[in-house]
Length: 89
Image 1 (cartoon, rainbow, N blue to C red):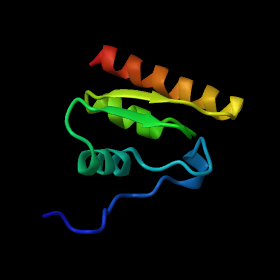
Image 2 (cartoon, rainbow, N blue to C red; image 1 turned 30 degrees about the vertical axis):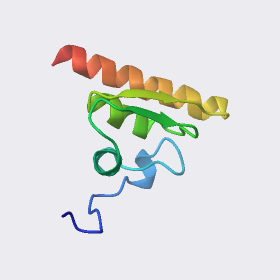
Image 3 (tube, rainbow, N blue to C red; image 1 turned 45 degrees about the horizontal axis):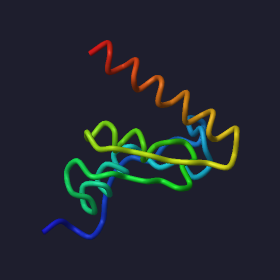
Image 4 (cartoon, one colour; image 1 turned 135 degrees about the vertical axis):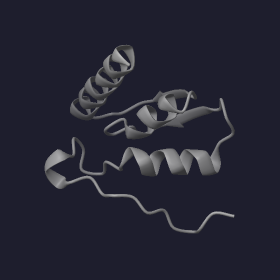
C-alpha cells in the first residue's frame, strides 16, 4: 500500500491566491487515493480552485462553488491559465 503521509512542497505564502490553498500535487494524490478514474469530483468550498484544476488535469469531471466573489474570480483566472497551458502543449 501507500504510506500514510503525503510529502510535497508547500506553496510559498507570497504565491498563494487563497489563504487555504493546497499544492496541486497534494490535491492529485488525494484524488487518486479516494476516487475512481473518470469520477466526478465536487468541491463545495472551491477557494483557489486547486482541487478543480487537479481533477480536470487527471481527466475527471470537476464541479465547484464558492461564496466569496474574490476567491471565485481567482479560481476562474487559475482555470483559464490551465486551459491556455493545455492548448499550448
